[in-house]
Length: 414
Image (cartoon, rainbow, N blue to C red):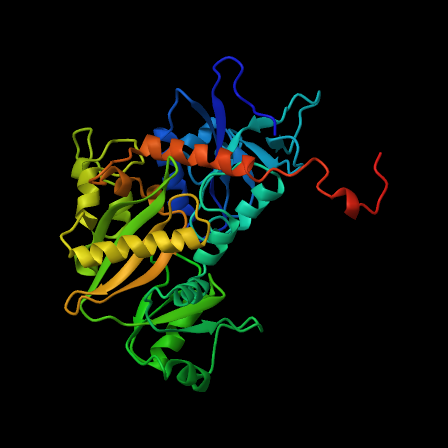
């Protein structure tokens, strides 16, 4: 594959893909803007590639500011609509969809794709498969692991096969007739082994979208339409008393398999609401409350401390289990990128279960790596590590220009 280093600077070009046709579209925009502020500008130039909720692709520096989303009529005049060139021998290329009278709109070349999507059609292996097809190096979790880990039901099967503890569950699938309703008798049969109360949530979404505690079949039936509007399957898990959650990120840093700091998200009654966490308020003096940075999409350390405890005091046994299970799962799926593994525990009994995996966590989980007690990894270095991994992965999977072995050729070559 040809490289597209800037001839003047020697830098590689990274195309950051974000947005998308997902209920988590807005969170993806915030994560991507954070990342684009953190890239090592001495080594990389970045190109924002925004996918709108209706599936249109756009690029342009106008997309670097949070204030410009979502694109209105005026904003659309500041960006260029593009599509991806999927011919596998040209490297990464974005093709403008409209050309001027004299054909002056040229393709936009890049070396590495950096997808920063959350949820459907971006975090679930779909766009990763497109990059594979086009032979474009891309950062993050690869197609197989993305598809498996974004499906909470399939993840349960994998955990069961590996002997990693997971909560009992049942699955409710959206009817194929287009309705969102399931009869009570069917629901009673599905939920009888699980019992109530339980936690009901979409099988393919994150960011706490559609999650509800249900106490009866009637409540399940009432909650399902809201889930089925955005997902084709719901998963119900056994409710855990004395609930405590733990999260850890995992990945390879310079070839070494590592885990990040562990975080304990605070309980629901301690949490700020979504907008308070993501939209810090002006303090009236040119700054932001909670220590934020004005006009920056990066959350402050003060804001993060309001929603989670980093490096909480836990037993050595629990610390070992959290890290060991994360690395076992990562290795089993030929892991790349730096996914975040979420656990559920009982604070009284000390039991713990692996709950779900985020192939592309919010903010790329950078604060977990920066808080690592043994060997902190700064956000900029985290991004660089994933770009280098992307290039190595792509180089290691190169096929011949004609991938058909000589003995299998049935058609004439010219």
